[in-house]
Image 1: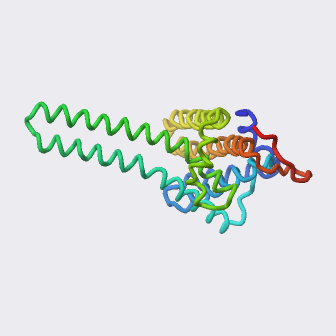
Image 2: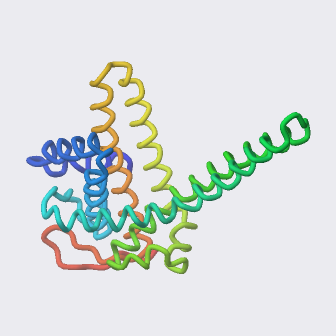
Image 3: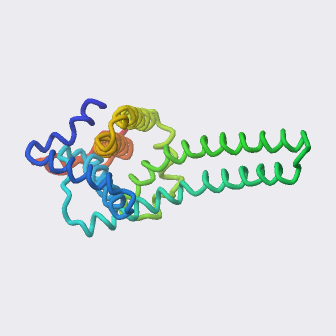
Length: 237
């Protein structure tokens, strides 16, 4: 599956370079927010296509619709990301307050230090949990075209606890991590490293969401629309 995901964009022999160029430039300009939303919209299209078994990568077109989809996906990610941020903020702030109030006290210093470490650990664990849930939440939104379904525990639980989704997620995570490592090494070269990291990040994200889309389609028995074929049904897993 990793091999197929890395070759996914190249299925469009004529347009894949253009897609990577646009995606890379948008990722490079991600600090402006709107480009990030557009990239998120493209990833939504990747999930929508792959969950239906379509191996043709989507194009960067119909920018308004893409922006709307990207904004919805971004909101979903932010909502899930709020919990780790709030927990970390409360625990870290409480630890710093304890250290400040108990200045000169060994007990307060130890308690504050432990609280700080617990806060960091909790935020890390919850952050990873959010990162695990978000792709599935986005996929459920994509399938149903309803943002509220991104928070449907009943829909998400069987997918999140399946081996197929876990394998797809961990594979995508590995691809993104490797791309990040390569980008980090290239950052030793001024400017070039920054640009390369943006393009690698986009390519890796597309590969990751390709795997998520396929896993979601298999697990949810999503209608398949192969190129040139009539709609069919996936075999139930």
